[in-house]
Length: 263
Image (cartoon, rainbow, N blue to C red; front, side):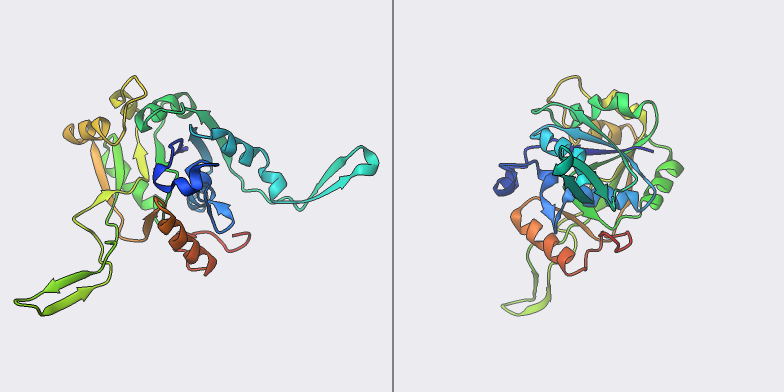
């Protein structure tokens, strides 16, 4: 089953980082968050990726074009016309298709344009800026059991601030530091989609997958929620990046579901 990753947006809320590169190429540790996301899938047996490009897509193309070079030892023999010899090549066993889906296209339009690369088979879909310790096997099992067109992972993000529980008067009866959920479950990405979902997508660049298509799927009884109570964290701001960086550098990253080797 192929994994589609939305990687074409502008990332305006983290513009400090995205002036020179697309949001999925912002690094956590010394690797782009896109690499971390792909490793979550690879660790659980999913090794074919279709990446939707848009804003500064050439940066992502260049990254994969030079991927093997960046993860190997190299000898340049300038005595022999600059001959290059690659040693100890370390490369993940994945297949990556990079698709130009439009610089200004919204998410629904991007998904529609990758149809030739996924065919008439079910596929997974996620965003290029979110990490989780999600059990993809459990997600896929629920999707198949329910038999609906789409399954979305529902998550409860931690509140940004601690919550005071106030009794009568001025006494604080309790305090919760960043409790889960600021009002309910939200879309955490990590979808499984049937090819019928393409019929719900509009024909122009303005189609936003999270708006009319998902609303129609829900009203048609074709949308399942997979509840994920574990770790989930998007990277929307520099503050989020700093938090994820800290977890990774301290070897406390819950999303690292793969062996330590090569990290």
